[in-house]
Image (cartoon, rainbow, N blue to C red; front, side, top):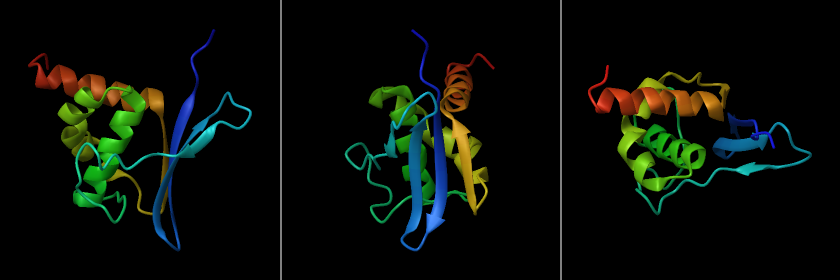
Length: 116
């Protein structure tokens, strides 16, 4: 059994910033990612990216939680992930593989453990 290849896509529409996940192996396995306001409420009005504010913090937490499937680890790494990845995402839209999200998180965890 092969692992799913998941891609996250962020885009802007008339209602604001939208983020979905898509199983590229799929037939049709996709949907919006949860804001995860249950973990931390930075931005109840929505996601953001391309800067370091509350919308990007909410997106960083949501991406980390979804990619990892581990809320505790997501809470430990999302702020660093915001600055390392989310703050630099292009304003108009972006996509990132789940595997790349996990690689960034791994590097953040190593840095937090003093291994870098």
